Length: 142
Image 1 (spheres, rainbow, N blue to C red):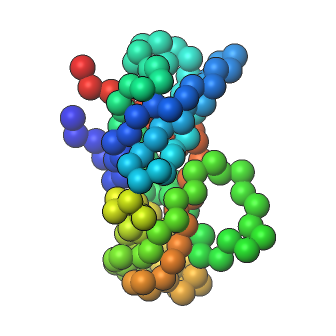
Image 2: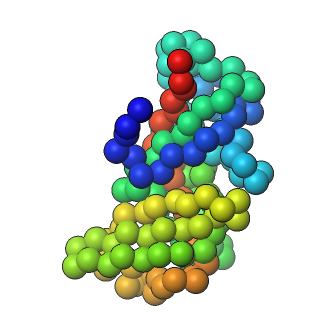
């Protein structure tokens, strides 16, 4: 399968919290990290999602926000993955930021150049990748 999302994570479903229309799916990643996805109940059934099932979680780089100073920050986004900036490609309009997580995986964020400058981003800077649960697309093989 080929997909345009820059971020792809292999994981295993930990839990599914059912709702009336959507369910919250917790996906365990290597190294003790977790991603939360909001998935329709129809998709839960069609994909055969159950606890213990291997899945891939996809997140577009444009859906990833970066947080560099989390003191007192209160956000509604469920997914917060801490890491260190490993690469930064700056363009006149947008910047691509590669954040290496503690488990060795990489998260890419595409942000405006202006935001990159305002945050003072540079290689080696600690940051947190932040994205909302509805931005996570789950996929299964077979």
